[in-house]
Length: 430
Image (cartoon, rainbow, N blue to C red; front, side, top):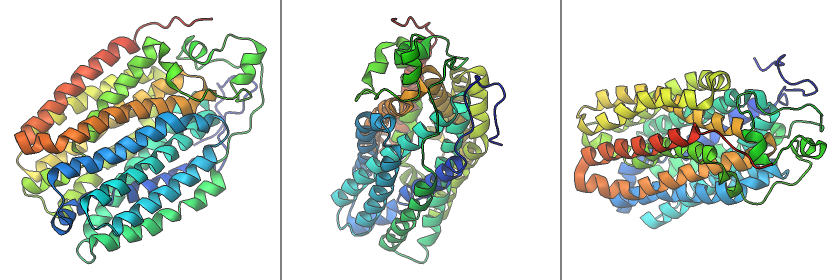
C-alpha cells in the first residue's frame, strides 16, 4: 500500500521509513482517544464539581488555545530536527493533563489541565505531520489523510469507551486509566518517529500541482544551494508567519479556519445539547463514534483526491456537504436524527480538512512542512478557540438555533473569503 511511487522525481526515494506510518497511526489513536474521553464525562463533572455551562466552553477553549501556542511558536522546531523529541514531550504532556484532570476538585483545575493537554497534543500532531510530509511529498495528501483518520478513530474510541465506563466507574477513575493508556504511545513514537533519509539531489521539483508556489514560499529559485535547503540542510526560520506573504497561503489558512469553527463551537457543548434533546450518555458517546466512522474510512481517499485534483477541489466538495448539516442541527429535536446527521457531516469534514491540509502541503516546500502545518492548524485553532469561548454563552442565550445557525453563517463567510484568495495566482519574489 505504501510502495514506491514510480512517478516520483528521479533521484528521490519516496517510500516513507517502514515503521513511520504505522507508528504515527497507533500513537495518534492513543492520544486522540485519551484526549476526548472527557467529553461524555462533562454532564457528570458538572454536577460533582459545580461546573457551569459557560465553563464547558472555557474548557474547550483552553485546549484549543494551548494547542494554538504550540502550533504557531513550537512548530518550526519540527523542521530543525526536533520532531521526535516533540512527539515524546507531547505524549508526556497529554498523560499529565489526564492525571491532573482525574485529581481536579474544581472547574478551573479542569480548564488548566485541558490547556496542558492541548499544548502536548499540538506539538505531537505537528511533529507527526512534518515527518509524514517529508517522507513522501508526492503523497502528502494521502499520508495526512491517514493521520486525520487516526485522529478521528481516537475520537470515536475514546468517548465511546468513557461513556460506557461511566456505568461502572467514576469520572476520576476513567481519566486516570486514560492517563496510563497514553503513556504506552511512547513505544511506537520511540520506534518509528524518525526523519526519512535523504540527500540533496539535483533535479528535485516542486509538487506537480503547485507550480511556482512552493518555490516562492520557501525561497527556492532553482540553485544548487536551494535544492540542498529543500532537504533540511539549511535551518528553518524560527517563525512560520513569513509564509503568509502570499495571498494564496492566506486563503488556504482561511479554508482550514472555516471548518475549525464548528469544532470549537460545539465539541464541548455537544454532550449538553444531546442531553437536552433526550440522549443518554451511551447515545452521546455513540454519536462521537458514528461521526468519526466516515472520516476514518474516507480520509485516505480524500487525501488521494487532493493529491490528484488539488486540495481546494477536495475542500469545496466537502463544504457543500457539511455546511447545511451544521445549520440544521439548530432545528433538530431528536437525538437519533442528530446522530445520523453527524454521520453525514463527517464525510464533508474529511474532504474539507484533508483538502485544506493537502493544499498547504502542496504549496510549501517539504523542508518547511512542520512550520506550514503548524501555521495552518494554529490559525485554525484561533478560530476554534474564539468559537469555543463564546459557544457556552451562545447556547445559554439562544439555544441550539443561535449556536448552530450562527456557526453555519460564520463558516460560510470565512470559507468564501478563503476560496477567493486560495485560487489567486501566486507571484513569488525571486
